[in-house]
Image (cartoon, rainbow, N blue to C red; front, side):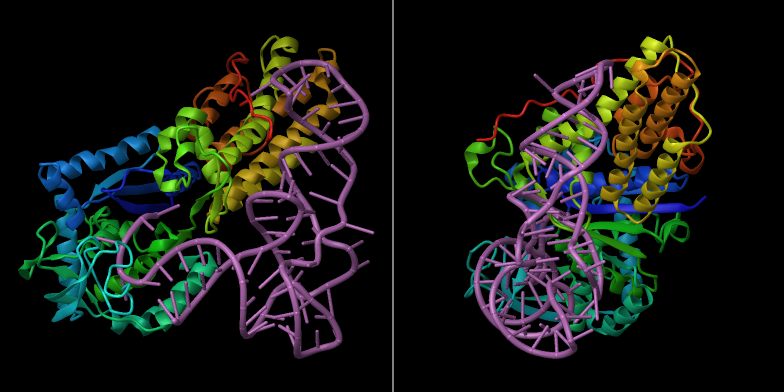
Amino acid sequence: MAKYYITTPIYYVNDAPHVGHAYCTVNADAMARWHRLAGDEVKFLTGTDEHGQKVADAAAKNGVSPREWTDQTSRRFREAWDALNISYDDFIRTTEARHYETVQKFLTAVYENGYIYKDVYQGLYCVSCEDYYTLESSDEGRCPIHGRALTEMAEENWFFRLSAFAEPLLKYYEEHPGFVTPETKRNEALSFIKGGLRDISITRTSIAWGVPVPWDEDHVFYVWYDALINYLTAIGYGRGEDETGAWWPVSHHLIGKEILRFHCVWWPAMCMAAGLEPVSHVQVHGWLLVGGQKLSKTMAAEGGVKLTDIAPVVLTDEFGVDPVRYYLLRETALGNDGDFSHEGITARYNTDLANNLGNLVARVTTIVAAKCAGRGPTPEASGELADAAAAAVAETRAAWERFAPQHALESTWGLIGATNAYLERHAPWKMEPGEPLETVLGNALEAIRLVAIMATPALPQVCAEIWRRIGLEGAPDDQVFDEGARWGQYRAVTEIVKGEPLFPRIKVDAPR
RNA sequence: GGGGCCGUAGCUCAGUGGUUAGAGCAGGGGACUCAUAAUCCCUGGGUCGUGGGUUCGAUCCCCACCGGCCCUACCA
């Protein structure tokens, strides 16, 4: 059994969970579900990043300890993911003891390997960013992000010798062409490395809310530096239950494009410095950009709505959990920026879900109920629809394997279209009861069964419901893909259920 | 300032150094009536951002420009 380890970034607790987080997390979830379906042993990790000055400040402002504060804020992410039916296996918090232990072990290894040294950092500091700027990168002495005046500061820090890894990184990229996907993002990372790497300051003395540096207790590690290591914490690196050998280095980080440098430059260099092989694959996704006229009624007033202002629950309340998941997975090719709009999600809902999938299930279950006494007939062993199904299964499988949920779903929907067309050609509603009719309906039911399996990584609840309606026991995600998705296995166990529409159509206002 | 990405049909996007550049949605025509006014069939002359260059030939390669976006060391 193959192992599959996939991670999202750990989200910064001071942010409220928004659609951007959901986009990344849903994609990772679909991949995790796909691999479970494919029969792999899966570890799906997400979590929260809880250190740093901003968190400490927020806690103080709210009159609670940082620990209490992060307990509250971290919980919001868990709740958001539970609401989206995210099947994470582990939820890591960087304030956990296991994380401290792994970070200290990891960085001690880097230190002992000679890649960490002490120096004085002098620069212009922004308290909000908790970071330094050079004069050039500042906005005339003001922070380019916060606009506030930068203060001249000097701090004795520990530094990571990133500059030593330019050559090893280039070599690693060369020997691992699939390390960063898509290729355009790989090129960005490469050109950054080729542009020269500076050593980075990785500790702070000014704050206490962080992981202590084991060999110098006055310092804590800079948040990003401890955050990246979470991926190893979850598999027990440096601790008693160390499973690094089982899950590493063949693993997958799904990240947004804005944190490409941390994951594609810093992180592999850090691993090398610790004597560890870097992660084998970083999949970079783009950003959803808000388009359309109205995202939701409650936000229309604001004018420039940002994606990061939208809580996932606003969407799931309106469209349902699985439709939101479907939209996030289907609309945009992973790696590209996508267009996110109320019109877009409505269109996907009505066309793909209501008209194509929902209606197919409705028409077939209705005819079976009327003409077969509610008991689904068995499909034929081969034929036109079987051929279409085999093609869709192969394409869907290949697309999931190459981290392309959009194409996987497109291929799956190809079978839905083929089945609707098949029904038109044979018009079972005109046929008298008998074997020819049973064959047509058995084939249609079998196609629906396969669709339920193929789409379950995206629509787990709906596919389970379809499974039940067509008279099967269990759920599609109990299947092992290569076995279960082979044509010809549909056998009715229970009566067909017509049921209410799976996706009631959404009324659309006439175009203005 | 430096680095990078993008600009293709009304909309969202694929795509390739070479005969007539594709898909989905929307739109138009037809069929059907089992189904959520759904489904099925037919229907796409768009200067492939602009201007140059390389080439026998470029939408795809190079340069410049215009427009949008991202990173520049803590927003998925």
